Every structure is written in structure tokens, then in C-alpha cells.
Figure 1 (tube, protein in one colour):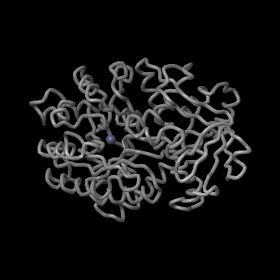
Figure 2 (figure 1 turned 120 degrees about the vertical axis):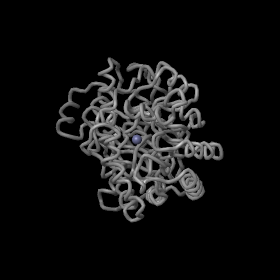
Figure 3 (figure 1 turned 90 degrees about the vertical axis):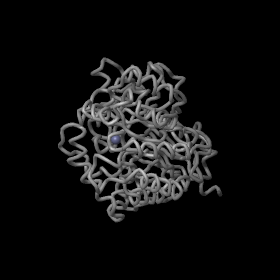
Figure 4 (figure 1 turned 135 degrees about the vertical axis):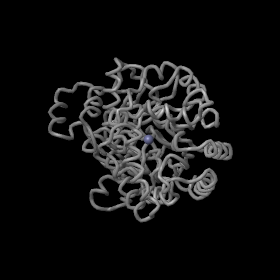
Length: 443
Ligand SMILES: [Zn+2]
């Protein structure tokens, strides 16, 4: 790398180092009013006070007065549901059968899958999200499209084909054997290629037979370093159906426990209506409860009990769950998380919200060695935020007197309009997208 490849981003730099315990917990983050993030070769070289002398020989991109933060991380999203979002359904099972399962059948067609995958990553970039854990469809072609498009943009993405062999249309069903075989060959094809990470993805207990969960268990044993992602305890009718399908097991979480699918790299979508035993099992296993507020409100699933899970020591992540979720924006998502917690008489302080969007979700996904914070050696995945992005926000900013109030305004009123720029592995992607360059590779 020569000096011309090095870029200096100047701005108000904010990065978390620990989970904020209160609004006055200044030890939980590092904030530099006139900061510099020096990047080169896709990595952060150093971060500190802006120094005009040191920056003199490099390209300086001046983002003042905006905030420079680690790129947002979305630990639960469905890429084949771009054309499902905003479907007028009642509860979960009706939503799945009427809209989602119809749309997902189109992803056996590579051209369709590639078109949607491209739009999907553009949407993430527009919203400042640089890493996600995504469910693809049952078809291996959907995984190929997903990782090919992610690779074009050099994005760190976790994803996998859903394994589902029952209670879905024939066009969306694999078998225990083919689900195992397809997953195994997709792992060989994609896992560790560039920034791609494969996730073993049994969709949920309702759409997987005991034989299929055994196949998922075998994969988890063969590839213990992989993520596992699934859904649990979202909605009362779903819970009752799962128990009916696995009558000899103690509860819904007990199904994944029985097939040894719980562990530190397991992401459990929803976790809304958990018994005491289920909470204990999740905590002991080190699995992550993924809170998806916009989805939980939209599908009417219920109010995630953040304080209860947190008090039990359960690891918590916060995610969009598009297309049950209604926004790609992590700002909108944490705004709804705040409201869900208000309805439970709980408080989510804005420092903790922004911790969740960045370092918290990176830790929940065991990716914090590379992403989720700004420090030397980390990947240069960054977002630049403007809390005065709309006339209304700019007016409100006139009365904002602290960093935490600025963050709260960003979360409450912000969306993609508040995202000035998104850097992926050091490349300015959002502005490139707006100039009409698809992959946006520029140095
Ligand atoms: Zn989901």
C-alpha cells in the first residue's frame, strides 16, 4: 500500500468499548470531537485527534460536523422478502402462507435472485448497514446470488439457505437429505471466501421434521465454527403448533436443545414468550436472543421482555427482520425497540441503542474482532450520520445540548436520510450508489 491509498476521514468520531450501563456511563464509549479515522487497504490504520500535519500527504474527506461511527449490523433479516415487506396480513402463520411462501418460490430462478440480492445490498448500504445475518430461500441459487452480490461490494455477510421439509408449499421444501447435502456443498463453495460466512439455517421447528433437525445437528457437529440461525417463540399459535409437532419435548426451546443447535454462535429470532426454563436454557447455552421490534409490532407477535432477558444474563441482539419487519433502518428499528420497552415500563437509553446497532450486535454475532468498533486493525466499515438531515431534525438539533440527546434524536426521527455516507472495507458506497455505480468501488 502506498501513501496515496490512505484516506483520512475527519469528523466527530464515536465508538463503543463496552455496554453502556446508564446515560452517564462515559467509560462505555470513546468520542473525539475533531477526530480522524485513517483507513487503507480496507482496514482502519489508526484513530485519534485530527492532525493537519499528519494528514497533509493523504486524501482527507471532511465529514464535519457529522458523526463517524462503525457501520450498523443487522443480525436477522430475510433477503427474499424484499417484495413481501408491507403485506397486509394478520398474524405470523397467515403472513407466511399468504405472502412469504408465495414470494420465496421465485428464488429458484437465479436471474430473479440476483436482481433482488443486488437491490438488497443497495438498500442495506443506503441505510448504513454494513453487515447482516440473512436467511436466503430454500434454493441453493438464492445463496449463490446472495454471496455473489455481497462479494461484488466486499461486504461481510452471514447467510444460509433455509432448511425446510414440511408445512410449506412443495416448491419450498427440501428433504432432510437434500437439505443436508445442499447446505454442505454451499458451505464448501462460500464459507470463508472473501468476507462470506455461511450460517446453518433450519428455518424453524414447524417447517423442519425431526429428521431434518437431526441433519442440521450433524452439520453443526461437522462445522462447529459456523453460525446457526433460526426462529423461536414468536407467536402463540406458532408455539402451540411447534409443541404439537414435538409432543415429547418440554417446550419450544427444548426442540433446538434436543438437537444440540444451541450455542454461542446460535442466533434465535424473536424469543418473545419464553418460560423460565427456556430463558435458563438459552442463557446457559450462550445463544443470542434476537429482538426484532418492527416485526413484532407489525405482525402483532408480542412485546420482547428486554429487562427480563438481560437480568438473566441472556445475550441480546436487535434486528430488523425484514420483511416481517417494516424498515431496513437500524435507527427506525431501535426507535421501535424503545417504544416496545416503554409499553413494558422499561427504558432503553440512547447510548445502549447505538451500542446495540454497532458493537453489541457485533459481539452477539461473534464478529467483534473485525467489525462493530473503530480501532486500529478493524475492518473499515463505517457510517456517517447527520442528526439534522431533515428540516424538522435540523430545527430540533438547535435545542439539542448533549451527545446522548443527539443520538436519541437520530434514533427517534432518523432513517436513511440521516445516513450521509456508508463505507464498506474503506470504500464510499452510498455516494457511489447515488452516482449510479452499482458496486461503488472507489478509493
Ligand atoms: Zn425472521
